[in-house]
Length: 371
Image 1: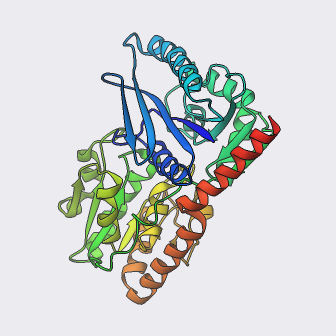
Image 2: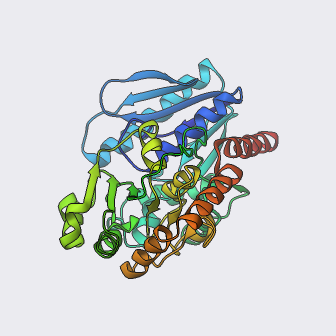
């Protein structure tokens, strides 16, 4: 089948987790023999690339006022889809919910909604801007696209509550990880505590920095490395929360997945006490690397992390509890190795790209048969 993924942050763009999730799944679908296209709006000139069998069309967005630019880009996107469909008929288009990019359908093509998390959910949880006109289009998309793929059971249920929409067909496909890339290397730095992701309040970065002040003080020789980029928060703000332990926090540049994987695999523990996650890519990638995780008891954390087995859940608003969980892992090396091995098994069984591609393929086929 010919599957098109709408994505405006396909790597190497520095952005959130949607780009990483789409790229891993798209390559997996291409390896299964499907024709896979990714289409989105980007800065710079219009260009087409090939990424491991995936055709990536990066359209140059017309520069207007921000809102007008976005509205015009939606029309531009649909025009490009019609051209692609004319050249090679499309079977399925998978749309992200964020910003409500869907305009209207193309005859004979099945539209699927991927429920990653939109402006509505960000705002409701206190992490987004004020009410935006784009939320109207997100709600419109919720109600028009009746084939839903959620990235976690928790978030899919929450989206139904926010949108008051009910899908006709739905399934869950967790954001996949390439377990051949994110894998144990056998070389672990016993003093490396690791975090990857944007410097965002919803990622629990405030709590992590405050916790670092505690666990770095009690664990001489250890350091916290953060592979991050500045967005809501600045590095200076993070360091201020860490107080006298700030000199033992190291900021690494934003990395591609190929660069990130070996660094993550070398850590003794991965810490991301998020207040709000729709899936939690960082937790999944760390588990695939055989690294025990200190995650969050909020949102989908309990669905992703097996508490006491692949790591620990913690209160994302309690720096003391987060710090204690880190110390518990680093104080028992044998148990940490057992947790890492259990995390690797869990990642392969539930979150691998092979599993995600198989479930996605089955869902696409079922929607095609019923269209």
